[in-house]
Every structure is written in C-alpha cells, then in structure tokens.
Amino acid sequence: MGTNPTADTSLFVRPSNPIGYVAVVMALVTGVLHLLAATNAIQFSEVLAILFVLNGLGFLGGIGIYLTRYWRRPLFLVAAAYSIVTILALFPFQGWGIEAFYMEGNLNPLAVITKVAEAVLAVCALYLYADAD
Image 1 (cartoon, one colour):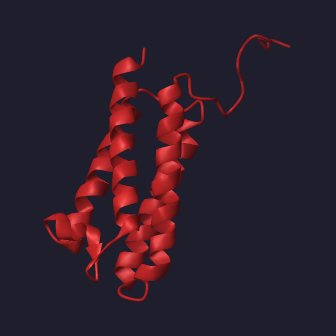
Image 2 (cartoon, one colour):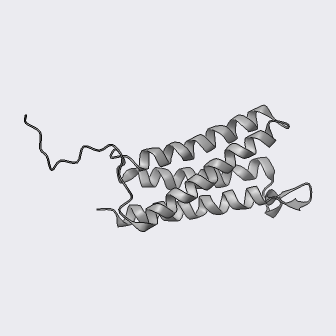
Image 3 (cartoon, helix red, strand yellow):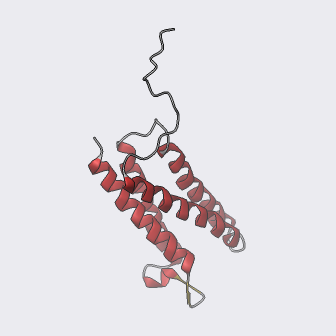
C-alpha cells in the first residue's frame, strides 16, 4: 500500500566505481593493521594502543558508512582528510624523517604498508569526490 516497488530500499550498496573497491581494500588493510599494531603498542604505551584501536575502528567504520545508502559526496573529502591526518600523525610519535619508518634499526613493514594504504586511500577518495555526480 503506497510503496513504490522500483524504489531501492536496501541499506547496503556496492561502489559504483571500481576505484571504490580499491578504497575499501586500502581502508580494510590499514584498519586491520592498526588493530594488530595496538597489540604491540600496548607494551610501550596504553595511550598509543588506544589511538591505534580508535584509528583502526575509524577506517573500518568508514567502510561501513561508505557501503550504505547514507554515503554522500562530501564524505569523500572527509575520508581523504582522515587518511592524510593519519599519515601525518606517525611523525610526531616516530620522528620527522625517514626514521619514522624504522623500529630498532630495522624497517617497520607495518608502518610502511599502513602509510602506503592510507596514501592510496586518500588519492582514491579525492578521485571519487571529483568523479561523483
């Protein structure tokens, strides 16, 4: 009664652009790796571990919102800014140069992978913002 059978009432939607899938994978990678890093960070600093958990949940939550009908074009800019801020947040904790990607004299693969994923996510989000209707 009064319903439109052609109206899309589903909560979840798939990305309309293939770049959206890349963005989801990058957010998933960095979100999960931040949650894993929290287990190591807790040994050094509870505050840092909490920040890792919140950051990981932020990326995973962003995926959840992106895959719903509630996603809007301006949120692409929020996603890009979130990714860029997360990249920059590494440096006050680890150092301002290339040494930020090292731990105890060795290259830290978690740091490298998460920052690359965040950079790719930021580029994808900006592309999707520009490409959106």
